[in-house]
Length: 300
Image 1 (cartoon, helix red, strand yellow):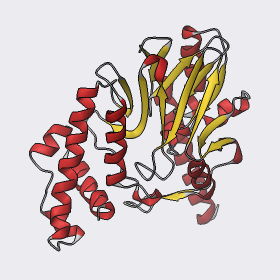
Image 2 (image 1 turned 45 degrees about the horizontal axis):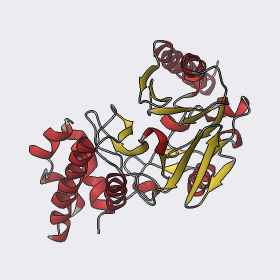
Image 3 (image 1 turned 180 degrees about the horizontal axis):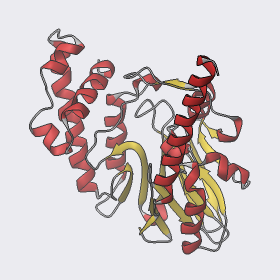
């Protein structure tokens, strides 16, 4: 056997082993449902949070996590309602929120998203920090129903409003306003639980856009509004206000260094998030390094 064949087989074995490990990890995942009231639930498994809005004739599902969890997600939904999923809404393009798209598409479920999300998924994206490329998505992963600014999505007895949150976490973010339950699904514009949000500057993400979107959430909320973040537990308005202050403080700290003429590497070396900001976020040093770089690249 020649060396090229040996290397190729070795690589294949590694990929198969990695796939088997990933599947084993998914096999252990349990889907947790949190009742938000008025036939609305947050679902958590492995990946981004999902939201289920149950109507009289069907379910609106916000985000789809990963494809290997499809059967478990459907089983969890079956505990909430005997009605089928009528629509899937994607809040942004990352695979931990859209990885199950094809499985729902094969079930005949239309996928709804902002038009930039579809275009960027179809073109492929590049991670601004690592240079890693996400190839163009297969057609079955792509939303078939797109909108520009906002659109209603309806099942019998329930209507949600899907709104574009421009240049925030990504170029094609959507927020889902569930007025009758007083719930907002924010996508990864809001990410908590020992993490900063990902300012995906490779897909036109912007720290100012994230802050502006959070301000919009706060302005439209009342003291009883529940927020389903992209990652983390359900949040109150007061908790979201704390999150907004964290973002503002981080932005101000990095911008001050950029305005002072510091290069990106010099800004990282200055550790502007160390101490209070990093402690409030509950993250490690590397997370702060990455967040400094992303803020530096997006702040003006």
